[in-house]
Image 1 (cartoon, rainbow, N blue to C red):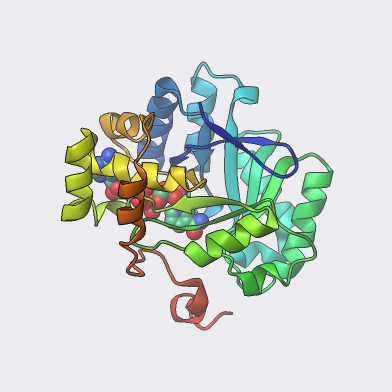
Image 2: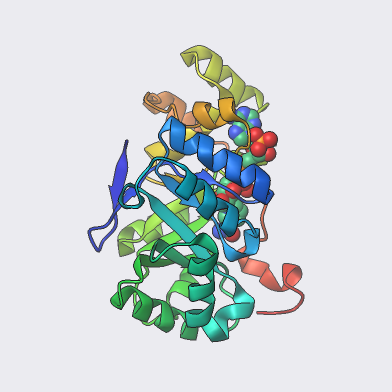
Length: 268
Ligand SMILES: NC(=O)c1ccc[n+]([C@@H]2O[C@H](COP(=O)([O-])OP(=O)(O)OC[C@H]3O[C@@H](n4cnc5c(N)ncnc54)[C@H](OP(=O)(O)O)[C@@H]3O)[C@@H](O)[C@H]2O)c1
């Protein structure tokens, strides 16, 4: 399986299974299928309320812990108690360490929380630490450069500038909602590229992201889709990449980090 290497040398599988909006039962089943299909990277969060089910699916599988890359996240209401919150993440997952721990949103207290995350990494309780939904203005407030920034990215939310900024700083980018939660799978340009190369619209959107060097975290609770999203062993031509690059329209499913007050009730 394709991997990227973080700037501390840790290898990260390029495709991870997303678990947001999956009930515990659905997340359990999706992770079991994903591990059977060959995924070795799972993305969860305290906020998703499915960490216990994800942990159970891991233990019930035949895949050993060392082969897996497990990401979880710190919710902003826990910024002032990051160490305790992290132990709670691990407890729910039933793990002794996480592979990647992320600050979920750049909301108040993230600067102090970051220093605690660095201590967790130093203590080898997680192999890598990073952030999510951070813009350059947030990244520049941290005491050190994170290894990873996870943010929304698809051909319809291209994130060219943020990706270039992260690349320059050596920050690995991860794309969430890479399938626009399904909304753009019927776009006629995506459908026509898919037809031309005998792939599906989901595979075209995911491959675009991967080919730009981003880790991708597609979520599905259907076995055949989980499999489809993992079969990306093809290359998009420069012409198709260029066409996909031209589709940016600022289309978002998650809150815009430029305006968190609008979503998180005045908190900044
Ligand atoms: N850090 C953050 O703030 C943040 C925010 C959002 C998401 N994330 C992470 O990123 C992951 C992915 O993002 P997302 O869940 O928002 O959206 P997504 O992966 O873009 O889309 C998921 C949706 O697409 C459908 N789908 C999946 N594969 C498909 C296929 N091959 N064909 C047709 N439809 C398909 C799924 O339906 P079914 O499930 O019914 O198959 C689901 O409704 C999350 O699960 C989470 O782990 C992180």
